[in-house]
Image 1 (cartoon, rainbow, N blue to C red):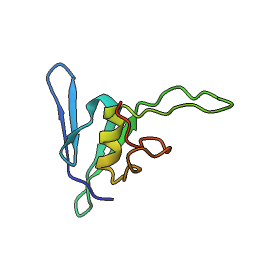
Image 2 (image 1 turned 180 degrees about the horizontal axis):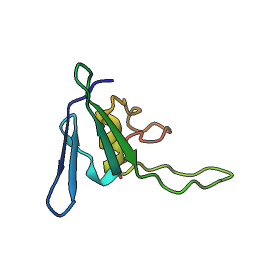
Image 3 (image 1 turned 90 degrees about the vertical axis):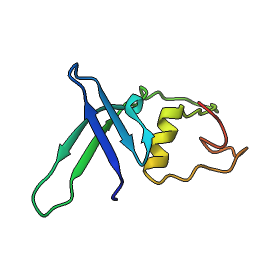
Image 4 (image 1 turned 180 degrees about the vertical axis):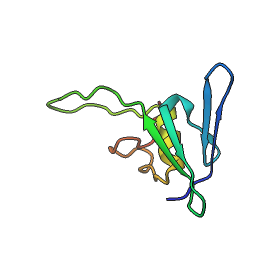
Length: 92
């Protein structure tokens, strides 16, 4: 999947990553950029993920704005507002 991105790293090492016009730095723990002549540039993002927990029963899933922006940049279509699906009209 091809997407527009910018990746900037300042002199202090602090980076800013923008994907499809959305700043997603807070959702990314690192990235690798690969480029070769005649090939598309490949950007691999390492995503911050919450610790996996096992739950039995029901839980409300709230997607933080940083995660929603990242998913939207990758082509995700959120569920309709009011949906019971994760991200269904909820704000992080």
